[in-house]
Length: 101
Image 1 (cartoon, rainbow, N blue to C red):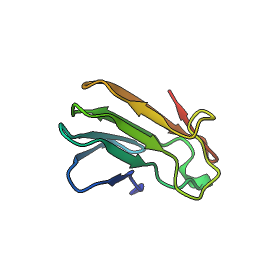
Image 2 (cartoon, rainbow, N blue to C red):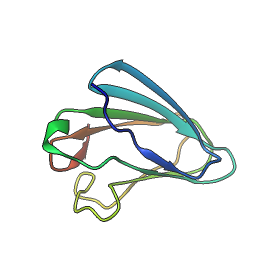
Image 3 (cartoon, rainbow, N blue to C red):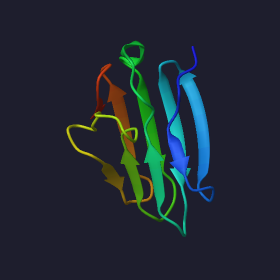
């Protein structure tokens, strides 16, 4: 199975994808000069249980948001900010929203 990944806004960011064991997907994203914004994929019931693991590899803040125009949240919040190089977060879909592990 292929699962949709996050959308990185801004061509300057580097994105590396490592799909080790479906439905666990690992992304290494970052930029040293410009902030990065990431939009998580839209949720459908078939995505329940998918894990997106995102590691901050740059020096600038990375803002992670649910899909634009959707009513989905990340642990009830409208965004999640990763500001420390080397930090990692796991986002889990329950079929209706995203949650931090």
